[in-house]
Image (cartoon, rainbow, N blue to C red):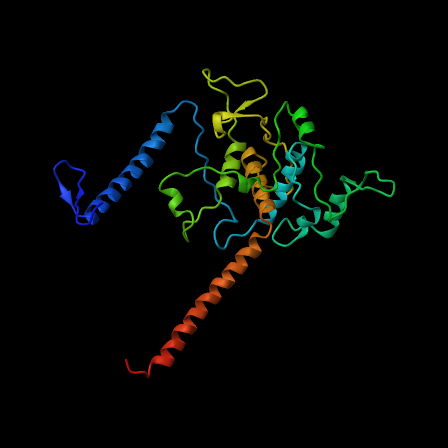
Length: 302
């Protein structure tokens, strides 16, 4: 555009400066985004068979000062071992990790006994052959299937994902304006994956009459498309707790999800401690710099 040429207003017959035109365009853009944010949830709510928004739960590990609940992690591991491990691998976790601080904190004997109850493939030996041996604490949990093809053959074509980082890999979109506050102190919400998995584990329902569920799949209100290949894994009383916690689907889902959150980030507590230490140091350092500057320049004429 040539210099001095006025920009056209969006109204017929009006002219205005470039600054005013830019401001008007920005206002229209913000209004358009707000309209999309308002109308999209309503449209989804009216859509047929759209997945529901996961429930939000309270987690002990949420927030800057969050910590994992050792008792909950132990219960969650029990649910995984007795229910989930028949289909889902957790190959990034070693037996000895269960004894480290900030986790379930099993004793050395408990870790050794647990490892001894598994067989792992090792080798090759001197003759070039692979063999099975009793697992050691340094070994990782062996997968329930030899490979993906074997898993799909046993699960009617479905492939159970590895649960090592599943909490980090899953989640849902909160929409506008919620996502704008997710990274702010006091508003941070990083438990999308945990909330999604808990809701998914409890989201099995009877399909409506107008909804066709293919053979080998199940109806789940939190799954995309409301179809899932995993049968309902939890039922009341399926796992026995020794600490008096409720033996319900709701409690099982929360416990095993908390355990999965720890597996995905076992160093969470250490990371938060380091972060708080660094922030505290920076605050003190900034204060020292300020007072040093005042001391040096206080007698200098300006």
